[in-house]
Image (tube, rainbow over all chains, first blue to last red; front, side):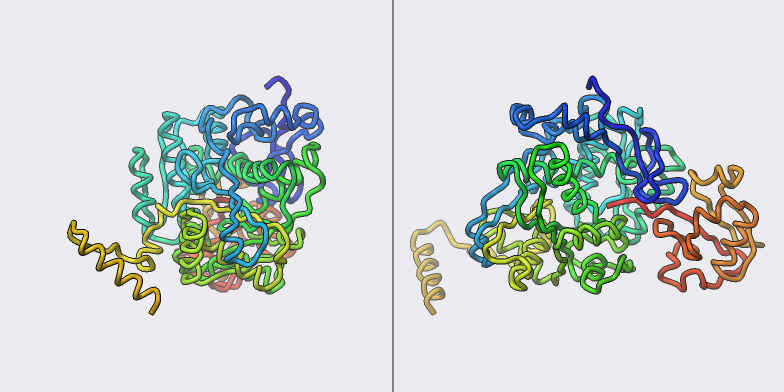
Length: 418
Length: 90
């Protein structure tokens, strides 16, 4: 890139400036560091036509991402479908509904490929040879796959009770997978110590300011796919609380650089009741969340009891005029089935959370029936099959005989009309 | 014997590069205050208005003090305290 569009890093609390370095917190007050852009220069460098002529992936927004050069990891990530979901809309009782479907993101079927491609491209710019992460599963899959493709060594730390398919979908890429007997928050604490002791590039620790920026591309794509505008409502699942803030930031940045009009989007947050520190704080009026010591939900990808961005997520929700809700594990499974059976989209448990929370918000009137909604589906149901295994019908078993099939059909009709 | 405090890497510039500092005290607050007496630059970075800063986590023998009795949690000789930045993960 000819002009440097990134000034460095800046503390979100005190504003202290830092250079481009692998550091996630301010050494003065421990506040989170965030990338500091030169928006005036980006406005000069970017317009709708330029973006539309580029390949359909997240890097068509490269000026708004914190790399010094071209992406060297995950150059084909993003560009997922925004699906008009009319059958789900009817089921939920709303007129206009879309699914932003990151369940089919490339290469590992979750939105985490967006953040990882930024983090690992940046890790290469910094010269790291070993990378890692603390993960509830999707990030593990993505770091392992993208690190393998980039020829980087990876150390992946996960809670040892994670879904088998998420562990397998990490080990297969040759990553060093470490199951930690503890909660995600305990895994995270260990990784913070490892990252700084060993000097490795942990995507969601010392590379976190760069990593988190990748999530903005989900928001950019929603706005572009709607015809360069924001929806009236967006529902976002929350684990660490970073994605929801980055979607709002994406909409605001598009307005700042002149690509859309000022956004007026209500941003709603979704959690599972068994781990709902952020939604509880929003509903009780608290300024910040109370951490949850032992999360207990089938939505393991959202099971972060002490969300790093909880404080900011609460502010984003309130500031936008949105709301937050949480749902039981039974409702999560129902939400997954509803999405699958109305739209043919098999989302992971977090997607079930998002659908079920949207239903609740519509029933409460917080999302009026005649307004537009986008649901962010962030991961693929094939990774969390256990969650719905007991809710779906067993396949019928017959001999290869037409007679047996006809008996089966007759029985099914009788049941249907009984 | 004493209480051992583990200092995060980016903060060791304020503890003469010591990774572990032995202090005295009967509560978490007392122990952290003793750390501040030894290395005054540390205090303002951990505390704000008498409370642990929003993005600082303190662990007593691997348990987050927010799940115990916060700064009033009792400590004894041989206990280990860790100061760890909270902005991570997700």
